[in-house]
Length: 542
Image (cartoon, rainbow, N blue to C red; front, side, top):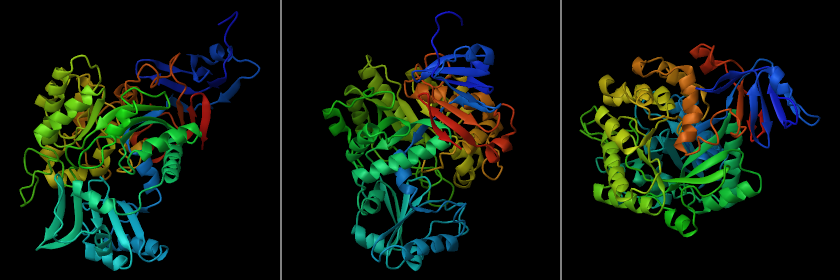
């Protein structure tokens, strides 16, 4: 490193820097023009210092490539950050939930909407979904909408049903459920029927969407997350979300890198026709904002008993969940989208839905052999060995969110039994088979904070300590690889980000403790992000 050398824009030194699973550790790194220039010892890297170099002493802190959440909903996350937090930690009982709703209603003009999200009936003290009459008790003069944590079940009170124009005679749309008991609406809407309630409040404006993206993105930066996949662009406000994203980027209000997955579901409002007409196909964009794939929903959530299983859930109703689309329609849609130039990233959690999706992908790949996209199975929670072999042969990617096992593992046991629930989301199996499985949060389904996610990958423990198949544990370096390099791989971006090596983007997360040496409980309970760097610029400091 002598002679006519390039002087760094930034140097991070005196740290424990994890460059990647196969790249090892270094003491220091240099950044130039937004990318990693060099890594090495303090002495080597400080030799790249120039008169204008910003030198940062890490003081022994631990740095990794910026984390990449493989599946979340950025704008809905930002919007719901202003809603009532109905998660078990904030509202563990029905009375606490009702009190939170009543308090928000007191601050809202009569006739207005009160929105809440995050409850899990398994963790609620009553052990069931709240009834609309119980929501009426909390806010009789307001329309109340309460979304389950998974996002696949929505509850409404009587005023919300009235505002939405729903009564006992309203038919459930295909792929949707409107629950009745003895002919009476309980207020529960699942899958495609949720739109009857969730589309009734005013649609967010473009300005509100930009605010939401900025709010959520800044929160992600505070957790060391520099990239994410937005899993259903168009779900909140249709094609306006694409406009909001580009305006946010233009005006410097998009804090994180976003890989966009376009809503293509016929049961909602597909934005694919408008995007395709505008030339927005997979790969279009830049390193900050790029069109990724198209998403179709095939089923729901296991904890909500709407994931499509081949065998019934526990209980007397003999339900196998919800099959949202018939085979022929799905096969036709996937073939059409792939033919239009799109990668696919479809939601399938239950083994029935996974099987249906693999078949659709196999048919599309055979019909379009010139396509090289890495088609994804979003979540892929309850797959089996035969399906893994088919996925491997077809080049498909399982794209799980391991925090599901932490947050919902006990719910899975309650609705499926231990034998079926505990092997779910088999990261060890997928890793050993070479699938390069990544991880994320599906926020706002789960909080995007990385600690429960990492904790579960290395322990397979749920929030209350239940071990969900210890044989599926990963090492800490494998867990970090899932959050960085493999998430980049799932976005066809492993050549530009996910590792701290020369030439890759200088996206860096600095944490308060060395994750390679910490106990799992220390990672979960006593670790925070100290600094985040995006493209060689400090964008967050604790």
